[in-house]
Figure 1 (cartoon, rainbow, N blue to C red):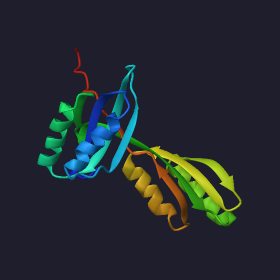
Figure 2: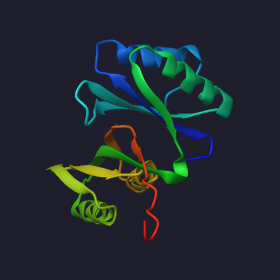
Figure 3: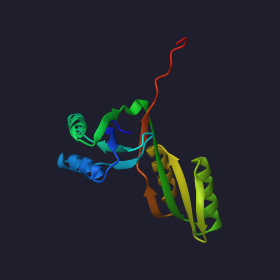
Amino acid sequence: MASNRHVILALVEDKPGVLHRVSSLIRRRGFNIDTITVGATETKGISRITMTMAGDEKIVEQVVKQLAKLVDVVKVSRLKPEATVMRELAMVKVHAPNSQARTDIMQFVEIFRGHVVDASPDTLTIELSGDPEKIDAFLDIVKRYGIKELARTGVIAMQREKASKPGA
């Protein structure tokens, strides 16, 4: 991710309206969320919100502090991009009008470790997961065939564990 890109994690109570309050707080600050994903955690009743956004360091810091003040927010943290594992899932429906195009597209799918999950006489639907840059690179390659439909989940992320010291 670019240096002005930020990843914010919020552990929140799994209640109606929490996502709305979180996104409204960010909207009121004039910030745009690039991606947002929400899902269950290992703790019952707690959901994890992962947001990516571009912006000024001071504004992001203000957003984090304001999020921490929301009643339903249990914990907020920023991930350091250099020490973060990020993944995204994409499904792409690509125009494949002939056997040569199908062969080429399927080779790209293999190179990018994707999967063809559906096929019709003139399209292939591909599932691909990886970091956002990998998905962007795949899309750049197949766009010449014609992307008929695209769905991306948004980024999920976790901080890498620190390597244990020898003898520890």
